[in-house]
Image (cartoon, rainbow, N blue to C red):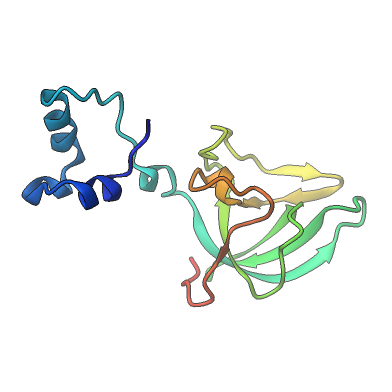
Length: 147
C-alpha cells in the first residue's frame, strides 16, 4: 500500500519528525509496520520545466498529431504532440531531451516523428507519475512561471 507523507501527517502527530521521512519510516518499522521503500516524486520531476504553448499547427503527415512551439523563457522548442487538449497560451509540463519519463523509465531522445523533428515532450499526469489521467497533457495554472 502506498501512503503519502501528507496523508500520514494528517492522521498521526509526529512533531519534529514531520520533515524527515527516513526517521518516520524507521519509527513505523519499530512499531511493526513494514516500510518497503520511500519515494520522493520531486526528485523524479527535477528535469521537467514549465512551458507556454505559443503555437499549435496540424502535423502535415499525421491526422492526429500537432506541432507545438513552446516557450521556456530562454529558448523555444518544437514538440510533436498527440494530445487533443493542447491549445495556444496554455501552460504545460515540458520534458527536455535527456529527461527520464517517470511512468516508463524511458529516456527522451531527439526524434523525428513522421518527418518532423521533436525536441521534447509535453506530459500528461500519468507520464509524470502524479496521477492516472493520460487523456491529454497536464494543464497548469495560467500564473505558473515558465522555465
